[in-house]
Image (tube, rainbow, N blue to C red; front, side, top):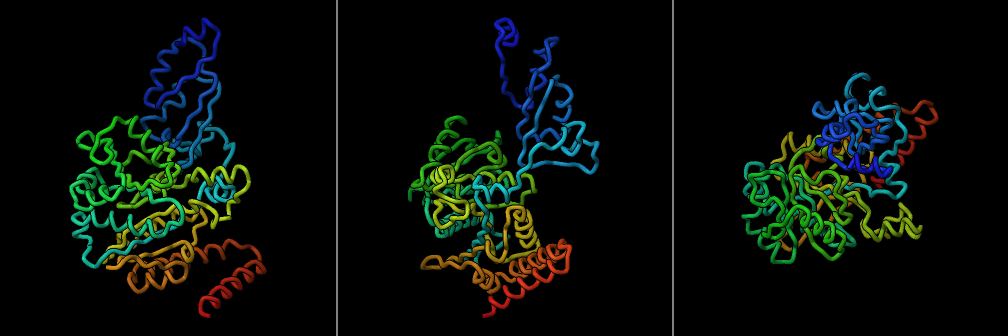
Length: 391
């Protein structure tokens, strides 16, 4: 193709993974250098297995795009803060700016409370119940589309356990489509929808089509395979069955941060403003955490890490946390300041951690203010806020 395009004097565009870049360079041989290289998901180039690509593939210009910039301690290392390798930063948009401009939706944390019989020790055996109850309570907090819950599993074994549960069968029989995908070669459900196997292309096409249908109810389980490059605008929330490092967490949240199509059109034609949340079909991306009874330091730290990672999105623990509770006769809803009271009654560790985090954020904010006037103004606002809560 390189020879053909050169002979016909036509431009040639090559699409490849980073794994194939050396093959492109080998095919190029002594031909002229590539004019422009566009590196998407460029944070992968920091890895040892790909970093050499920056120098190996001959080019005249190249650009790097990423939603999760990776830097290293040294400015001369493999991190994206190495100006000699990656060049100067051309453009940056923070998550908060993307939300304010209507390019993505804001996060909310949903802590799902299950029955007292669920403990850390028997969590795996009760996985089907935890997923079913999380899905049911997630549906309760939505105000528009049907629930489409993404699940970040601990391993392919979670999918195997869930597929054997009574809850799995009940959910499918009730009309919920259950998708399962993993890169594990040992799994029997690599690209499965409701017990039926599909090719990867068919699976992704159906996922995108069903995801855009507001009437479809879906549960999508994956293990390290749907964190990037999947544009399914209808996903309403992600259930975290494991702690994720910052990069994976932000990429995972990105799957549910897409605007619903009707909201995207409203933003585009300016009939909908980014802060008109009561008019959105999908105003929030829900980060769902099952709160089991025997909360320990691991659970406490997991919730802290999630809240900390969401700070760049303008997340406010006092306002953006919702807790729902499993009841024999249905689900009850608590939100806003009441949510914190609700957590305190059922989950003192979680409540204490949220209070401590909020205090840390306020201390940091106060320390960042330069003038006494700004500090007094900020403190006055806090006092007014606390006074209002006690009224």
